[in-house]
Image 1 (tube, helix red, strand yellow):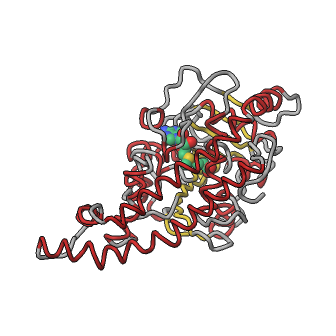
Image 2 (tube, rainbow, N blue to C red; image 1 turned 180 degrees about the horizontal axis):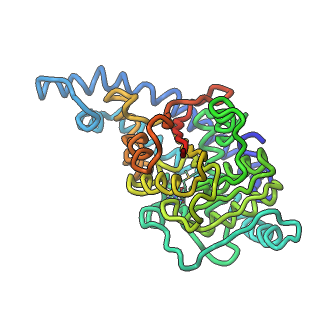
Image 3 (tube, protein in one colour; image 1 turned 60 degrees about the vertical axis):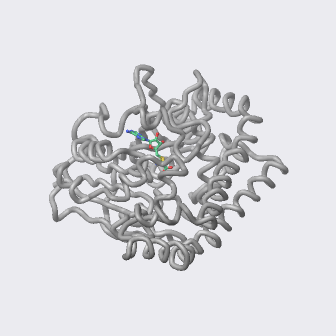
Length: 373
Ligand SMILES: C[S@@+](CC[C@H](N)C(=O)[O-])C[C@H]1O[C@@H](n2cnc3c(N)ncnc32)[C@H](O)[C@@H]1O
């Protein structure tokens, strides 16, 4: 299974909708790849000299760089176009979803009720999603992660998958492998012979990473958890449409209700950057509690480590925090995975973190892992 597979729960765009999506795709690619790199020259040639003139020294961190960059008309122009491109992306994603809303709900109903259903869905009406998720439209997604509009509502998932597909392509991320498949290759290299029989995918969203785990390990029991009901209904129906046996639950990744030592593998994909530090640390602690002896925790995310960037690189990366509703961007970029694994109880000599590249070399993901003795 590659990234972005086609299935019955997808909101297929018609000709004109696709044309608008392709425009946005190209716009995002152009802004990200052609315009954004020029911001460094704006800094070096225009903004930095002004800071030096005023302070008698160069800026030392991303905040000081921000003081002068946010005065530069060319940077403001980039920022406005980048924001517009994101908003246009959601407009172009929304059109086919709302046009096909009834079909998506009916498809959910029929897949959920099917006698051939392979997985399951356990929603908890008493569950209250974290405020930072339910009150924020993360990355400007109009129907937010925690949205729930009723018994067969799947909008949050439809938006997440539709937007995610365009966003990743606009960011130049190849579709040869899903993130889960990258981590499966990572496991083969780092833990040869490790064959999990029970897998937990934390903060699974629309289940785009959960399904490749179920398909790659057909003998394993695969569970996915997230906080949003609309997201999980979609994930469930999507997995059924793809013939993948996944059990979805509405739970907090930092406080699950699974018993101790019940999983061989606990993973998360692109989840830490949507969580405050406290929740990230709680998820690492849960990983340790939930793993059987010899079990492995792997938490993968976007390559955003501030420790690997100079001050300008940090300033550049911080754009999403302020302009793309990513409140936890820096909580992740500056986190300390080693400390979180140690605090959770994992032995130091089992902890590893670094980069692992997609086969098509379009992105090298941040990967961290540790093993329970
Ligand atoms: C970027 S998405 C994850 C993408 C997904 N894992 C994938 O590979 O496609 C982040 C997800 O984290 C979920 N999330 C945030 N805080 C959470 C928490 N405390 N417990 C469980 N899920 C959480 C959000 O609802 C959202 O669906």
